Image (cartoon, rainbow, N blue to C red; front, side):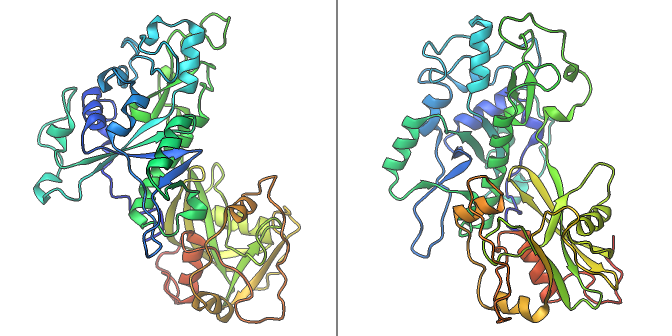
Length: 448
């Protein structure tokens, strides 16, 4: 199973618009919160064996920062279903000093400030793994506006994500009270976190990021507010699109289905391309990547493309190699920021010559033999990446280029593979050990 996959939470999507359920799930003594600073989750001090765990907070730890000292969750979730006629909740004091007012009592400029600065709070789901088998089935009665955590999932442990980036006092308190804790970079520091915890952290990160990125409606420019417990964003009825302007006509998003209202997932193909005899694999590197680092080729699926068409196009554009058969292997959620990596293994056509001058994305691409890849695998787990190396792979402007894809003499293990947390590693290992569907050349099962 890919890292970040295997999320154990029951997301209960049909209850995201139920104020009663969400309020009971938020205020429950069982509720647990994953908090993020600049999208980095709070992680406890490492265990003696080096394993890291998410440092989960409780409702009492966060209540004053979410609803205020005298607030309650019922007020917070007013209008959570997105219906225009419902009065919105109250303003937390950390957003506006005179917090406690109804949002409806504020001026247009004040409301705008609230909607833009309110930290994302997202319901991730409930963990029902401790429930008896009889309690894990769907409820006998249809959920309604009176459903609560106790009536619907009495054994469930609710999980939430909450952004604390702007709450300096809280961050300082958490780090002071929990020795050795840190807000850890998920790509550089999460490799030792158990997969199921990492998958929850990934879900929370993607949703917090999406809510923070989408502050204004792309259709009408009004400020957006979070509804459905962080899983939808809706324009605020009657709000002007900018200070000093009259409210524009009703937004088109109020009717029909519009993908900008909901968290998006971008499909990406990532592929291990074999030579025609399947004894070599095509890997490439970008100029800014860490020294000697090579990986599978990858790219976003474009509009009107199938998975196999995207595989063939990306490999041709990046390396000038035409691909024939394509086999689906596996997929991986990738919350950087919100991709679904679709792993495939393809077979190059005969007589192909590698060239990287078509779109100039790669500094180098080459065929690696099975022996070369196995030597890297057998040398031990791939090195965990530092924050600086992650920045290099992301191509950030302040990251230093470290060219060095040269083969320094052909010794075993001369290049670096992606870490085990990346599906690129999974694909390389599957190819090298012949464990993928379609490994036998005569097999056509799994072909796309």
